[in-house]
Amino acid sequence: ERTVGPSLGAENITRGYHSVWAGFTAIAVFMMLYYLMFGITAVFALAVNVVLLFALLSMLHATLTLPGMAGIALTVGMAIDANVLINERIREELRNGNSPQASISAGYERAFGTILDTNITTLIAGLALFLFGSGPIRGFAVVLCLGILTSMFSAVMVSRALVNLIYGYRRKLARLSIGNTRWK
Image 1 (tube, rainbow, N blue to C red):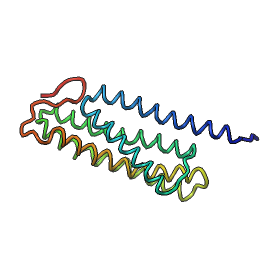
Image 2 (cartoon, rainbow, N blue to C red):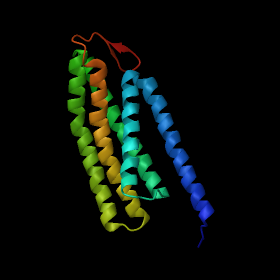
Image 3 (spheres, helix red, strand yellow):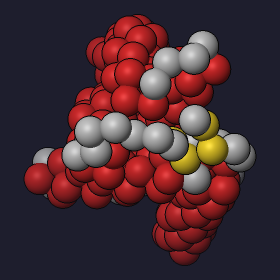
Image 4 (cartoon, rainbow, N blue to C red):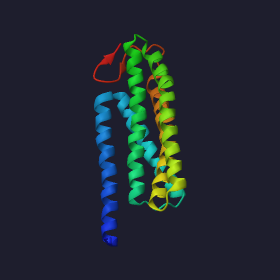
């Protein structure tokens, strides 16, 4: 049996907050180095995801607890995973000899099904946690479910809008900066 005082709880919240931002920063640096311009769009979409999630939690007057921080950390990981799937599909299309514009379009289209499947299964698990859990488990489930919805929006809509803004206006796109080489 152990008693936890308010200072230890506050310290854990602060550590959780710092760990989420440290994870976000590490992911951002990796994505920008590995995927170049597409990594920058993924990081921007990830930032939009986190802002949307905090906005929803604020609208619900949710108190951010340690399980909530864990839900946010999981959301960040799932959101960037969706962008990795999209970027790798685009690279695969480029390796198959498709044009850069066709590769972008096909990459988003082909990755969407996988992203949807993984997010729906995680949403089902989050709903089960909410229905059968109590206290902190329910708080984690709420953050997880909201995070899944915001990550679907940001990974698919925000990143695609940014990529279209950057590359879409060009009639003939000769090069695409994705990964450690430039694809022609």
